[in-house]
Image (tube, rainbow, N blue to C red):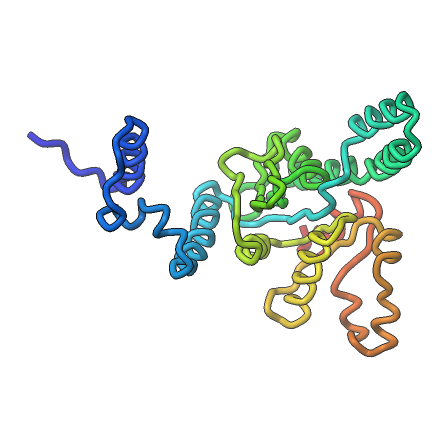
Length: 287
């Protein structure tokens, strides 16, 4: 008697594994035309199949997060270049020993900015502590860009509380490896920035932006624009580090020149404390 067919048998995955094993044994692949379309890397990387790759980058993280119960996230952005206080102190000791004035200046700046690493870590712990007391759709999960710096700190805070967290990494010319605190089954890698940013917003119930560079600004202002134009539902947008953000862009100039309205200033909130950041989100949703 034959075994009943399993409804969820992973035929496609098995076929791909079979193809890889075939090659690993030293056997030549069949001619391009005879390969299964989904198992043909050259075909999938053609310009004409870009739309398929868009769909795949849309579907894979979405399905995997749904399977792991990730429905609501708090997205944390910030510089990849800020290091932990421990690492900053190590860099400072090395710079002092070297006598290199430029290295010392950089190390001192790292020590100064390491407070943001600690604050991102503490903020994530508050989120994880709240979620530990809830189940299902009431839970909130930390999501980051998956890299080092502030992203690592946020994933680390959740990890230290035993909470899963998401990392949405991006393939870059200078390879950015996922930080070690992301939940392995929730660590994703993207080719397309647009799809990555879409995934940031799909489940986001709040955005917390720590000081950062061009990437942070790109992500932050896209979210502000989506909310301003009604393309996304209003969510708390928290700018952590008021001195940094107010020095970086002068909102008063934008108001004076009429390029934004007075109402637009209410789209975001400045904070300087992890508890204050969490309280903004709690107040918004009445948690």
